[in-house]
Image (cartoon, rainbow, N blue to C red; front, side, top):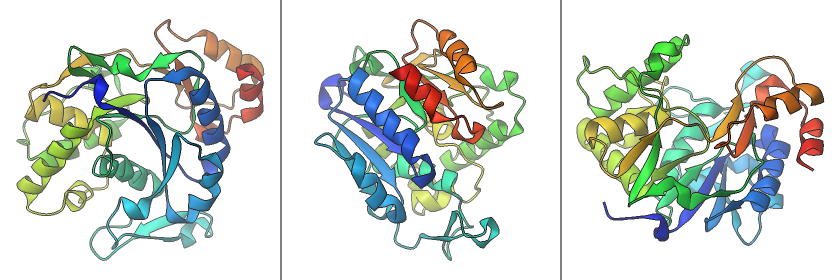
Length: 292
């Protein structure tokens, strides 16, 4: 692995219509504060492409998931949500929800990307401080977010299931348990590492990587990449950092302007952005006012 910061960087954001206005704010603050990247790619479903075209610019491109995912995976209106949402169906894998497919887009994007640095940023992130994507690199190695032993502090059993299924997808021994947490937003992957991971999965399972990954729908792309780097590559081409660059409000009541100011004041000096999960139903207007 000889790539480095000079090989180009892509900002990558999977999104959907329900997060359109949040994604618009992300784009505005990204254009204001972020440097060191070549293009920003918005990965969306076919039915959302036209809406997101409004956010395109000379450095921002909308990518249709049809150009990323296999043709046998189809998005249809979900009757269980009164047709307000979509579900992805095929005859080859169990039905997938939007959060599954957003993860698959992230992984699959490496197969079409030209840039070596892939910086992933959710659409409910807002940049508040300057950030250079070159900061993900140190002496030819890429930063890998990892909270060593972080699994021990999590009450959500879902994380442990995601870790177990990452091990299965990677062909690791069942008794080889990971205790590390790799999940946050505003992270970077090496394109060559992702491609190597996909080849590894296909060799282990003798089937397309996507079929192997979604054989159990309880998966996390962040844990999959993290375990591949640490346990298959033995850390090659990466260095660990446990500092989350984005201050995230994962859950809780809706934030009003005062609560939002308090939340922002809690940012660490090294943090450059905040993320307020859209399912908290926090209004964008106070945040827009605070961003200015």
